[in-house]
Amino acid sequence: QPHHAWTQLRKHAPVYRVESDDFRPFYAITRHADIMDISNKPNIFSNSEGPMLLNHEQLRRQEEDPSSFGQMRTIIEMDPPEHRDFRKVASGFFTPRSIHRLDEIVADCARAQVDKLGDEGETDFVEAIAQRHPLRVLATILGIEPQDEDLILELTQQLFASEDPDLQREGEDRGEASQQLIADFSALFTRIIADRRANPTDDLASLLANATMADGSPLGPVELFGYYLIVFTAGHDTTRNAISGGMEALLDNPDQLAKLCGNPSLAKSTVEEIVRWTSPVNYMKRHLLEDVELHGTKLKAGEDLVMFYASANRDESVFEDPFRFDIERHPNRHLGFGTGEHFCLGAH
Image (cartoon, rainbow, N blue to C red; front, side, top):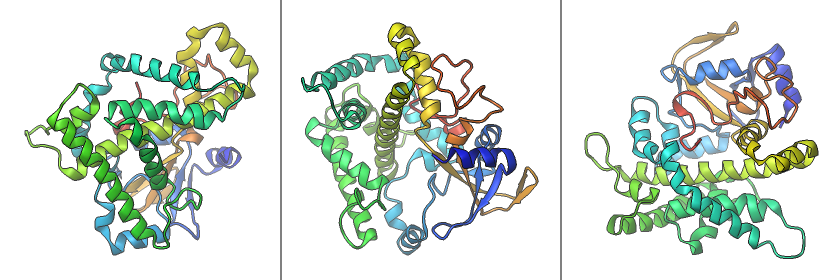
């Protein structure tokens, strides 16, 4: 992460216009307070065009075939009041009281992953633990059978790394590859939805498959597929990043590792510091619905800005000694789960 650059921007240019050969111009927002302010004004700073920066080629494909990008729609791409209505569909599952039903699943999964490590004394931690542990937990609550875990992992990697030659789906035509990827997702989720409607249980897969809106109408297929997708991808990628980055931070700071091993009750504050330190979601984009002025810079309706959470989580005006990894940090007002309307549904 370019922390040196972000530090300079926070100090000298907190609203910085970025011009690149690969992307449309956008404004980089790097201060904690500004991200808090923007996140709490969805009537001005909209999510409707999606949270990610698209390069020129992706934008061209979207303009040529808008339907290919609309076959799954998630709550991240919604503004109020629509966002609130769709968020309520699953929010009850993720309350602190309800989430305790996962305790046994999480503990059993953690033990199983460690028990698989064998006697050789070393392992690829990212692959064996950081990636596999949240994969099994999420697959369990979303009704994904163990034999389909590798498939859902491969599909989500291809989705998020569509421009990465090591992970992207094979094929010269990226548009056609994206279409086939969405079709594979749809086939997997359609099978799960049909089963949970016929044989409902108390898991999240059943809640979503049988969910209705406030007016009693069922979720449409686009939004229903999108809900499955966002719960899995947002839950898996972020948790994998936090677990692997957290282990690296503990190894790089042996005094903190020793402190945690000596006092396991520090686990909760350690998790918070790991989320601050690793910032599992690097950024989110917003689209301006009206003209505004920030720090003397005039932004116009139709322009994009990008909130860099990893920069906010090192903001010197909020965190004492922000470049120190401290598992007892208090207070810890990090933005690792975002804030405002789109505060992470699964934060608990």
